[in-house]
Each structure stands twice: as C-alpha cells, then as structure tokens.
Image (cartoon, rainbow, N blue to C red; front, side, top):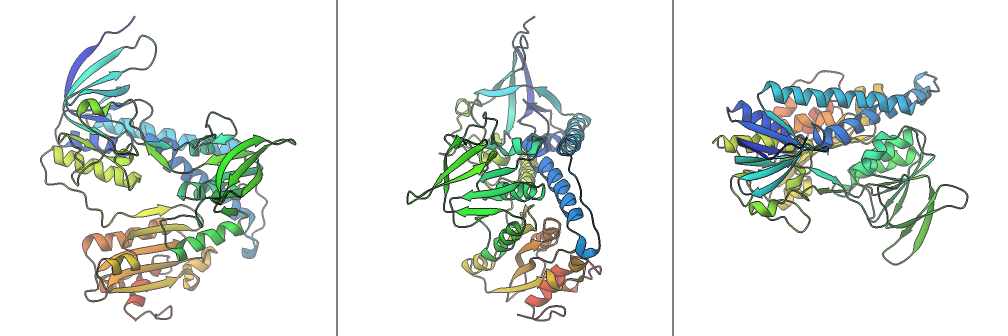
Length: 475
C-alpha cells in the first residue's frame, strides 16, 4: 500500500543526524522546542559510521599488533597474528553501540525522529521521501531549520569508488583483508592515518602527493616527525605527483600511473588504491535553492558567526558549512545554532578549536602558531619540551616529537600550542583550555602536574617559554 503525502509541522527541523545534527536536535529539545530530526542513513553520520570512530578503532588495533611485535627492546618477544575480519567485526560492534546510543539519546530527550531524505520545497517547508517501495513521503513545515548533511569523499576522474580495487576511506575501514600493496592518493590527515594503519598491518604502502610534503596545514617541524616515523614503518612517499589513471597489471594487481606538473610519468604496482584527496559537502538533492539559499563554488553553505545562512531562520552546521571540517566543531556549531534559535546570545568562537591527527605519532594543535602570532601583531614567547626528555615518554618507548606552547611575551597570555608525540590528541586539551579561559604561561607552569605523565611536557613547555624550564634547556 502506498502511503500518501502527509503534512505535519515542527518548530525546529534538523536535517542530518551527524555530530552537528543530533547534538543540535538534542539541545533544541532541551530548550523546550518541538524538534524533529530527519536522517536518511545512519545516526551519528559519517564521523560515527565511516570516519572518526571506526578509523580510531582500526588505528588502535593495528597499533596494538605492531607494538606487540616490536617490543624486543623491552624484553617482550611476540609474533602477533592479525585476524582482519575479527578486527573489523569488533570495530563494527563499537560503531553499532554508539549509533544505537545516539538514537536512544535523541528519543530520551524528546526529539521526533524521521527516517528519510529531506529536500526543501520552500523557505519554511521540506518534503521527506521515505526509503523503500510504497513508503511514500511527507511534507514538514518548520519555523527554524538546521542543515547538517555533512560531507563525503571526493572522487577524482578515472578512479571510481564503484571499482573493487579503488577505495574510499570508508572502504578502507571495512576491508576484511590487508592488501599486499596499497597505493594512497593524497597525503592529508586521512591518507596519513590510513597509511600508518595499513603499514602496521603489514601492507607495503606508497603515498602519492601532488604537494612537496604531507599534512599541508601543519608546520614543517611537526609534519617532519610524522613523515620520518611513517618512513620507519616502511611507507614510501612520492611527492610532486598526481594520480592520472590505473590499469590492470599483466602479472596481477594494478598499475597506478602518476604524472608531475612538468609531465613526467611514473608507475607503481599496487593491489588497492585508496583515494584520500579531501571531502566535499553533501548538498545535492537538498534543493536549498528552493529555500533561497545559494552554495559557493565548492558546494558549501555560507553562514555567519551565529550559524545563520542567507535565510535567517535556516542554519547550517558541520561539514556542509565548510572549514574547519571537524566533528567537534560540528557539535559546537550545533549547540550554537540551537541556542540562537532559542533566543540566547550564542555565537561561534574559533580561537580555541583544537585539531588532531591520529597518525604515529599523533598531532594536536590549537590556536596560533608562532608565525600566526607574529602576523597578528604579537611578540610571541615560545617554549618547547621534547618528549625524548620526558620520563613518562621514555617508559612508553615513544619519545618522538615535542610539546610547544605559544604566548604573548608582554602579557603571558597563551595564544596556542602544537604537540606532536604520544597522546597529542589528549594533551592538546590543556592548551585549548588555557586559550579559552585566557590563562597565562604562569598559570600553566604553576599548575602542579602529576608525575610521571606526558602532560608534564605542557607544563615544561610553559616554563621554557618563561626561561625557567628545569627538565629541558631554556631557549
């Protein structure tokens, strides 16, 4: 039986249940607003289902196997065998538990959940098409809307993800076997996280990158630590080359053809090709133009510091609203959007948004670099603590990298920090809090840190910036 078009209304309509959407929906409901959340695929969005969580699960699993097999210097001798199918099954279990949790949280907070694909009919109406034969559609009118449709991997010409041997990042996270040879197109954070993961699982990894280094946004000394460690793991880099095409190899496998800007060609033998050249917003099929909203030349929806689009009662949060395309940024934007709709004086504050790369070693950054501080008119005071001088780092066997803190010389206010080393994604939270609360170098240095911990490196970096470091030489 075909269900006819039914019209209902809601105060707040949220389209997309990723980390921006479901957080916005829950907060809006907590504000006492009648809230409806439409999701076409899976609760938690790309981050929870095909990105952040599954990738970190495999990073942990591959890291554990690699650690166990390379701990002879500690007196530990092991030859671990990796059951990739079992690892993926465990990863999927983690994802299922979390996605189920998101759905339960939404329901517990009174959010109305609708499964389907939403498209704008006008500036206060959407049509939701339900999946499956005979499921029909319904029309929803709204007072406020929050678009949180996320992003998806960018495809490049000639490398169709429909081909079994051409992987998107999601495909790489679902593979139940490890390819002997993995070619990765793109040396950004996704490419590098998966490069180190698969290298630890035993694949011969080749990274092809058109630029002259990996991890383009990061400072040279930060990405050098990651690049050198990846090389130790067996990852080979081919810089200044872009993927041009692939072909079947006569002796099995595939040939990845590349070309430089000058026209020089190279070929690499691979069994799988992972394309990780970035992500693009999901706005196709949303028909935002029917609501009076335009996208930029890359498909992103432009917003102001209160997450409002050109149509004031329609907001956009998360990846669909552009950089920084981070899950925690999306959640923060979702909270701001709900607050604005509820009449609160909420607005975005980008100065203390941390970013992390889960390579080996990890990278964690927040706020300004030294160069950015100088460009902003500050006289920066910079302090560092190398992890090879950290007692706790030594006891973990991971001493690569450093913790760096950047402050204003005159006032001592912390402006930012860059950490590359063990647990950098966790350690950067202390620097982010310092930036957010307007803490000074003295505040950080005078805070007693537990010994022995990796967090002491942040304290020592602050002392170093003041010329008073004890466990490292002062700059």
